[in-house]
Amino acid sequence: MDQDTHNKLKKLAIACDMTKTMMAYEIIKIVVNHTDFIDFLQERYNKDDQYRIVPIRQDGKTYY
Image 1 (spheres, rainbow, N blue to C red):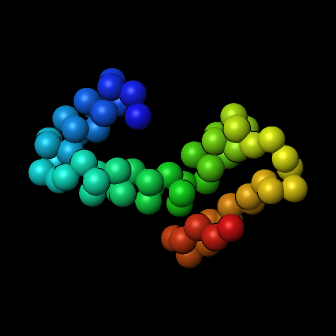
Image 2: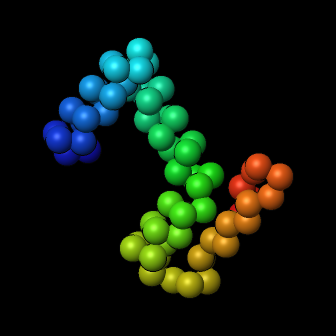
Image 3: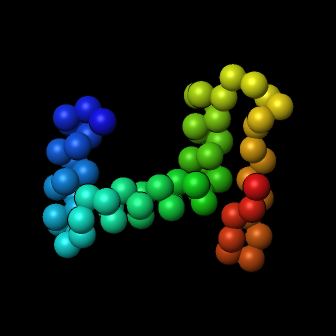
């Protein structure tokens, strides 16, 4: 992690009265369950379409 990202994570964690680890966990949990983030990351980094994830949002949950 670069220093700028580390500093932002630390400040956000302190502002929310959490550890950096718990804040990172919350951020990851949001990203892996948000279809727009999933699509953004795959558009940017996916190199092999056979591994492309198709997220489906149903009943308030995200399924792959």
